[in-house]
Amino acid sequence: MSRSGNELVDRCGIGRRRFLTGLGVGTVGALVLNNVEAHAEKVEGPVPNSAPDPRFSRMFQLPAFADPRSSAVRDAMIDIGKPGGLLDAADPLNQGPVRLITNPELSPRNRDQDVHHMTAGTTFLGQFLDHDITFDNTSRLGVVADPAATPNTRVPTFDLDSIYGGGPAVSPHLYEASDRAKLRVESGGLFEDLPRNRDMTAVIADPRNDENLIVAGLHAAFLLAHNRAVDAHRADHRPGDAFADSRRLITLHWQWIVVNQFLPQVVGHSLVDDILRNGRRWYRFTKPSMPVEFQTGAYRFGHSIVRPSYRVNLHGDPGGNPATGAPAFFGFIFDPAGEHQDDPVDLRGGARARRRFVGWQTFFDFGGDQTQHVRPNKLIDTNISSPLFRLPLAAIPSHNGPTALPQRTLLRHLTWSMPSGQRIAASTGSPVLGSEHFPELRKYRLGLDASTPLWYYILREASVFHNGAQLGPVGGRIVAEAIIGLLQLDSSSYLNTGFRPSLPRQAPGTFTITDLLRWARVDPASRGQ
Image (cartoon, rainbow, N blue to C red; front, side, top):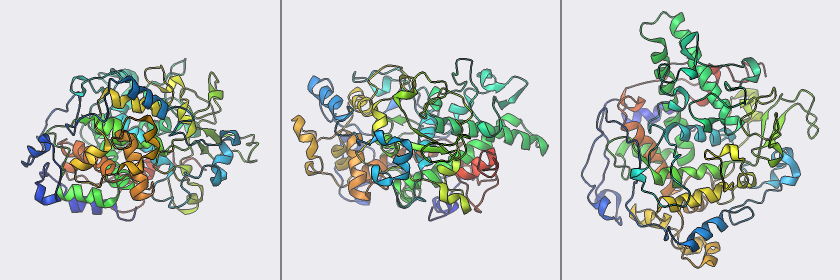
């Protein structure tokens, strides 16, 4: 980060203050406002202790990008998102997972510069974040539904309920039987893994945190971080409940990471600064709420930054990797060859083996001699890594097809009757990408080049405005306002309590994901790597 995290917070005025949730037209220039936005010019502040909305919602009351009940539109979404279709990056998977990392020319949309801006771990940190605030397991792909009638089975606040569940009393299976203040952890040492049943099902509050090995490793790190906080609480003889105080400590540090590290990486420092200083313009809810424009449209930019393969660790295969002569464990994020294997060749979840631990120096920059090992993520664009077009059914919460992730996302646009990227751009006063930016969509003869599905639009927008380094005006605004809004409307969040990081950290005044991994003792130094 080019600026310290505390600098961001100092400028926003931490403490109990109100933020603007609506700005007049004169403040932001000539905007094209819809009826809802025109009536939202009145300034409203967050409602203290307001219970989060248990359903999904909308940020914008705009028409759907196309007729969501049209078979022609549905067929177009399936065709656009199919294997080998417009979105498939056509990665040369026959070259193997090692060469796709060590030979950058084979997968040119992976970053090869500016590794400090967004490293490979940003992808999975973002996935972990998503699982903390949103989960739709009731609506059907491509079947029109009302967001306001659809439950969000995650609480839309950054409270780490994907880790803690309902707490020891409500979710006792997540906690140590002999010590209810501590989360359940089974395997220890270098080869850390999630607690599992005999069938290898992870014993966790959100099954999606076992979709792949890396997000499972993050989940395990949070388990360990909490348990170490409990130990420290007791060792220092602090008053209060060890579990509640430790959960609060880890949650506040997590929120700090989200605002001061993750968010500037994906939307840029200037937008984060603007929202913290001047308030939100379009996320106008009075209690924490999960809009589908975030859940299905903008935030699924993360699918674009997934690389086809990763080096998971440096020392996972003691016998040596035939392709490198070194004991590193490489794998495709998903590979059909891994189906029904006890120790899969790919990075799917649901398995335990000695090589299936995460060497975090590949994913985050720990500085010093570890920097040489970190790898960048993929650029944000309309080239989706080929392995994501053939997901294992186990990685899909509903366990049914289609297995192409882009098809699932585009069909979800029909479920929610999502507006086009162009309409949202116009309604927010953002530059509008014209049909010349989407010539490949003209062949469907549905006007998709001028009225483009929001997710597709946001990916192209990132390429046009930032060469894929971060989200563009529409995508960045939706993501940043939703995340900051969820925190501002939560009276217990760090934005409303004057919190400053207190756990050990490398840089004074801030706290990053590498600091949390060090605290959890899963960092390279703690593991002797």
